[in-house]
Image (cartoon, rainbow, N blue to C red; front, side):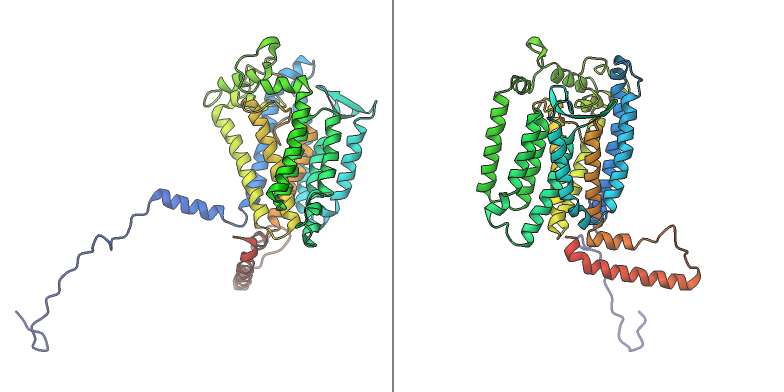
Amino acid sequence: MPGSRTGRPPVQRTVRRPSATSRPRRDNPLRRLYTRARKAWDRPLTAYYLIFGGSLLITVLGLVMVYSASQITALQMSLPGSFFFRKQFLAASIGGVLLLVASRMPVKLHRALAYPILAGAVFMMALVQVPGIGMSVNGNQNWISLGGSFQIQPSEFGKLALVLWGADLLARKQDKKLLTQWKHMLVPLVPVAFLLLGLIMLGGDMGTAIILTAILFGLLWLAGAPTRLFAGVLAVAATIGVILIKTSPNRMARLQCIGATDPGPGDACWQAVHGIYALASGGIFGSGLGASVEKWGQLPEAHTDFIFAVTGEELGLAGTLSVLALFAALGYAGIRVAGRTEDPFVRYAAGGVTTWITAQAVINIGAVLGLLPIAGVPLPLFSYGGSALLPTMFAIGLLIAFARDEPAARAALAMRHPRFGRKRGTGSSAFVRSARRWNTMRRRASAARPSGER
């Protein structure tokens, strides 16, 4: 064996085999997908995209389903087949303008509009009870005629008024540290809410009253109402609700139709049962767009309160689950906006809007599925009805404005280069300016992270 330069025999080195513990772990595809999804979910603009994209998809799909579900009803009324669709499209266009305006308005202007909107809503809801001005539709005296076929339901704007005014009231009291006293938490929020509820119940609209009550409870919950106080208000509201249901044969009949599978004597549960028939005949992928059978006179209010049943019949389980997923994403984004802000008004307003839309969607879908009594409330952004669509789209604009106003979201939006209106430089100087701007925005985002992102 040849020796080394030092005269010593060469040292025999043993080749170490990699142990089982030192081998690189195989990356699990599901875990990698979960990590990427979680990173995307935690980005600053996730809530902004979910609110804007989710509301847009719900509105567009609602327009399609309104056109499909209302054709037969329009023809039966000797009207063009696209009559209801054109009215809904006009309302969606006006609502889109309101959404854009609300999304660009500063928070101070939203707070300044709270009292005028509340005063206007109370005035219009009082006009409904004036003979010759108010109109009765399906037994509810909650409409005002605007001439021709156009009508308005002021109680829908009462929801927006309670959200804005209640959020501004609670925010001002929180700034003065008055919410620790129960009288400041209840007065004047609860009396004004009961005033709105009284004006609504004078017209017999129990469904809208339930939504308004849900908004009130949502505001009290966000304000940190004690359990005893919260339970007391809930008990009073439940007692009033039981009395109103017991004293109305129509409401008692609706309550008895929960889970009904047969129309019953006198076809009292006709609408509820045929809604189940529509969902059951849809299958997984539905019978096809426009191929519903129940809308041919069997299912009342197919394009308004029971449009979700027609959606299940024509688009199947896949279509209904898609609608539910969009509402779930919208609700999550609203909760995220309310939870990540430090502005009390934004927290209360975002929570109130999220409670409003989520509660109304749950009540409508629950009634169609036979799990809840039929309350006569439309599916937000989806059902036919301009009076419900306009304030809802303005409320969506509120959420978009709040989502854009988060510190991390502002920094992320500021890092984007403008596409129009400014000339971009060329060469190395433009690259240096871009790099400096990028580093500045990164420092600003990291500095704003503790308050704007958890």
